[in-house]
Image 1 (spheres, one colour):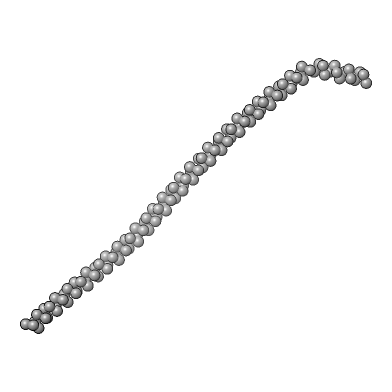
Image 2 (tube, helix red, strand yellow; image 1 turned 45 degrees about the vertical axis):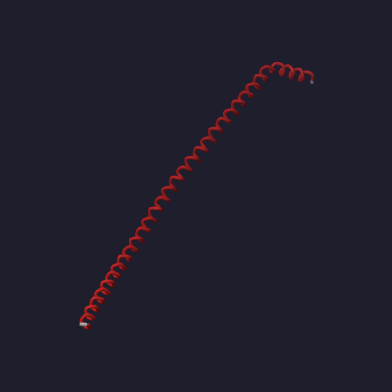
Amino acid sequence: MDTRNASIMSSMAESKVTGIIQSLNTLESDLESLTGKITDMKKQLNIKAQNEIDILYQKTREMATKEAENIINSAKDKAKAESDKIIKNGESKLSEIQSSIDANFDEAVRHMVSTVLKA
């Protein structure tokens, strides 16, 4: 019976070892599958991250463009107002000079005639 028990025990041990090896093979296969899935997930996350970066870059660019346009338009408006003010002041001064010329024209003509006649 000892031999028989040893044979049964040996057979049971072999069966357990075979089961453990099969379990390890299954586990290894599952790990490889998980590694592949993780690699795919990393790729997908990288793609999503790059897409988000592209979207944010575009939005930032649009915001910067709008801000630049606002600054330019504000500067244009300020320059136009300053230009209008300068033109108005110039027209006012021109009007004063024209009035002064008109007011003193007769006297200037008399002075010229007097100067020419004296010569």
